[in-house]
Length: 227
View 1 (cartoon, rainbow, N blue to C red):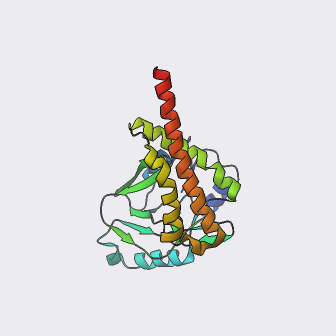
View 2 (tube, helix red, strand yellow):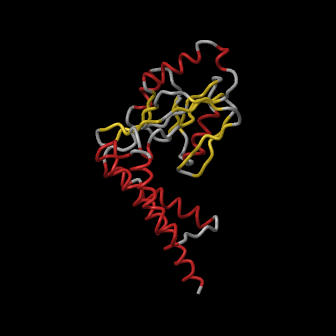
View 3 (cartoon, one colour):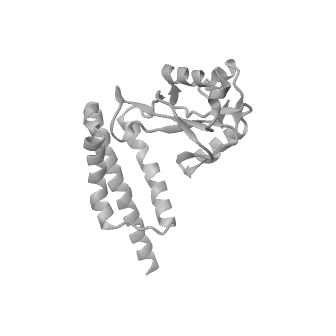
């Protein structure tokens, strides 16, 4: 099944040729759109994938093995698995980007999408089983594409932080960015991912610095307007 408002790259026809149903709906945000898609599912188990994700051969085999015998499907209502990202010509296997476990396979009616747009998260009512094999993630075509996605995510963070009445302290601004880099690059072994691992750790630290600074900027603007 494919749910989209305006597909014009042939994806809809390709999906239909394999027997998928294609639904057209206006974009309602990541969470609402995914919940709408899940509600249209007709099978007992749902595998939810984003457009930039693919099931690896190993993960497909592990899932098929799980479903070969019905008695194996007891005791849990969802499965999660590590997600491995392809970035600038390299599979990232360390740092903040791996294992990046995702819960994407669940029994219909046992979970719903929640979180905060655009960072959706599957909220499961019941036991989650961990699988070993990787979900493949092709999130960024290049560095320019990666950078272009940062600002929209930060604006959502700023809005939510202010709405929750949680200002940013100077301590957070000063220490969270270097901690993000140190944790990703050294503790989580990002240095084993070559220059890509270094760049990811650095960019995540800069992104953290910027989003906290944006909250402080917005808060200063609110104070100035109130005077």
